[in-house]
Image: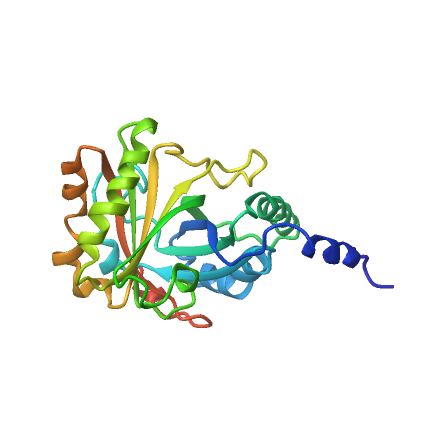
Length: 279
């Protein structure tokens, strides 16, 4: 006799609740495999965890992995970062979209499945979570207006680079002002003629109290914004003229400070490309 998977419940769940395609929430997780374990980590994540610990879950409808080779890590700033210590830590990044309105449903599943994976010895121990947080979507700014892919396509479209930027408002009461300035002024100006087709802006949310113990609680809830710049060219091609001064312009606004700017390129699923270039 097969295991009872309560299949009848799935029909009930599918008939109720939001089921749009808007990325109302995101999981953004940056991880550092321990030295000497880079190949094993990459194979575990791609061959098991990306699916069993992410894409197979309800309401997580898109995902993509990114990597920072050593030369990309050395472009990061500021050197004293509140996100990564040292700022070069965290060579692998995974980004996932979660259906708008389904955050609580997804969180119940993700906590339960990760406990199960841990119990079944399917969790890779030789790694450190540098920056792992669920987020609520706040805004998306497009370079080309209504032309081109939308944010729902961002993790499936073949973008060739990604820049992660974490900005912190002076106080929780000013995060709304910072968001408005980024959305309405700063980003439209910066995107003009840029290799970035869009920037998505997210607000971090607290991790559940029953999260896995190896993932630390999120800092900056209430003050931080996480920006994802989706690039149509390699980030190294335009780093100096497009991305190296984001901290100065944000600081000049008087609304907050940049805590982290980091470029990535996409991994090639099913391969170990770039693993030898991490150190």
